[in-house]
Length: 392
Image (tube, helix red, strand yellow):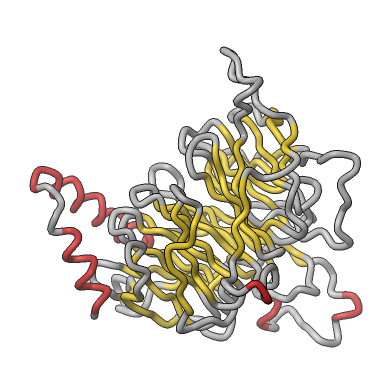
């Protein structure tokens, strides 16, 4: 398979002195998932967790469809709801609030970016105190993704079809105490996801990842395109039409080999950041429900699906991890979570219906790589509920 050849060739360039540690690290990464046990985390009556990041080895910050920003302590089950940042009084709230779809921590881990009380706005907090830093106004529709370029510059991808580039450091008022803007009225630059002006703004940006070595921003659109942007020039390097374009909602970056993965309704596709060429495809275990979250840990790809599955793909062997005893594909299912009474939809759904399954909309490994936080909620748009768990 071309994917296997690509990864293997890249790895032969690693220095011999590092091979021992690298082998042990990757071996541990591949063995850990088979030992995971689920411990559900109660979130109360919030709706669907869409985004999450580990703050440290104990705490996770997550964002919900009901626009809550929560910090969860995984050791004590303590949790707190943080205030979401408000924009200027003149800013107009959309009729429907989609909630928080993305959370990212800066490379130096001193700033956190997400969306604000208005889902069209960027909100930046200072870590570890969560003091407000700034609110960025400029998008005309919901923000689906945020991604840091460096410690003071970031990109946001929106349902309005644009990518906005922001600077959260004020060069005019910056002093020795490193003061930052309290409000950014417009982005420093804006990129559009479509090549033809006729469709400009119609193609939603669903996800972003940034490859620092090549300084390439990768954007995923809802219409089945991937764009590679040169951040030195803010110009498009290339555009790819995806082979599997249905329900493309998530990206993940494998940094060492400069690969990125795209999740769709039925497949995961792998592409080379440098040339934008496809290097492999694999089928999802839940093909009808879609791939909802992706992450790389070394050369292990973890996949969360719309039917609540978590499964693991080993890039070294180009195969899914299997149970040690049964040789069956290793696949975990999300737990019961919490579901609000079905009410008027009771005649359509029952609790065994597939749409009541808790989709894994987000997952992330802790800094040690030994714990996996996974969260989400019911797949159906009309159902209100949540799911969160620690797998360790």
